[in-house]
Length: 528
Image 1: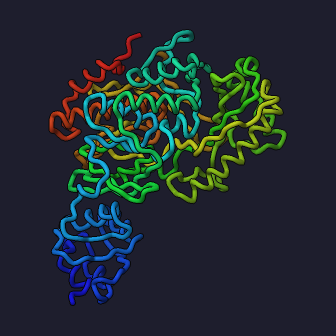
Image 2: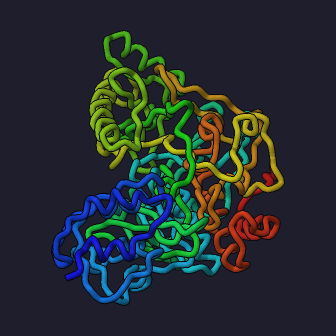
Image 3: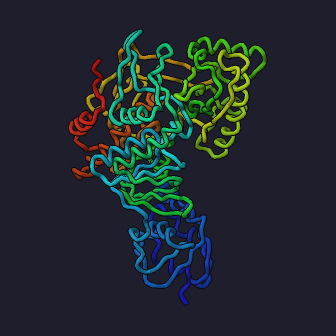
């Protein structure tokens, strides 16, 4: 009787990445029908990600012919889709064990992912949008942000000018149609557009449906299969178990760069490993919105500083108030989530993320009490909603063909290969109770190059949103909703163009891409 060890020794790839002898030493010389756990030691990261996945499961090896050695790992992973254990059998193929083969796979349904998926589908590509939570919108709905930022530039003391159009404008129009958005709200040189985060969920469902996007919710990426410079499959997990999507192009809009990291892409985390602080967002009901609307940011800060003097350990006193389209409701973005030693939480670490959620809820209760006591118009206010997850400003910054630099932002550079614009200030949530705002000159903006979305070392992988290729300080400006939607629209449009022309993403005809974006209302040259 042939042993399992002997069977595997015939089909496992023998290469520099796999510690072959270590693997075989861990396999018992039991009968080949026996079920075993296989734990593999590897030295190459991409292969290790896949083999780590296998370590969670037992599998049975069924007799029935040899398996092609080069495809073994992929076949093992994909086999998990149809069977309770990982089964190897004759005729197993990747295609027979995937649940979708779209032209474009978009992972993450936040502002960037929503726009990327709609743009790709609009251009004729079959598009699947996969979201980890139960609704689309990401920061706008799950975190319940409350205000669309980065859409307008300050021209002067009186005038605003748009820097983001296209699909972002469609979102605004759809919100207006259901009375779920207000006019731009200005706090000095800070401009946001308040909206109803609850109605936005339904609006985004309708929007993706109208553009022909297939959507699957409550599903998270857990592994990526690579073939040279391509991501050949992404493995997902949901209530149905684990399954594979085999796309032609992947757009990572997870915010944390999850898919790119799983695929082995290079990335950096913040500045020297320290990121911007996250926040727990919340809404207050019972607000006297007439009085609250009269408060400036300096006045609110003065009120909160009085609370600090009275003994409240507020981590942040610099904030504004977004008045919701619902009467008597205000959204607040005021908490600052740090560890006991004052450092920001690492919000891609599960332990840190859980601690941040609990710390956020503790701070929300404290701020509710403080606003009731110290801020005019909030005397009867009560927390009516806390975001389903904390708001994350910065984690992984994926290395692209180009990097958006702090100097480019500060100098308002307008590169010829730009695919989106931004005029949002460098908004830094660092240590201390304040927030640092470094504004661009009135009427100024900068461009975001296409190469900041093209993942270095890959031909079919893009990023869009706050996980773009950027320096820490530059990301502090470009990470808000407006520019993220603009980047997503460019990514989806560029992905479809790549497929239509048969070229790698970095080789897409940029003038053609820019013209297609303009045709759909995207702004690449603000005209005020």
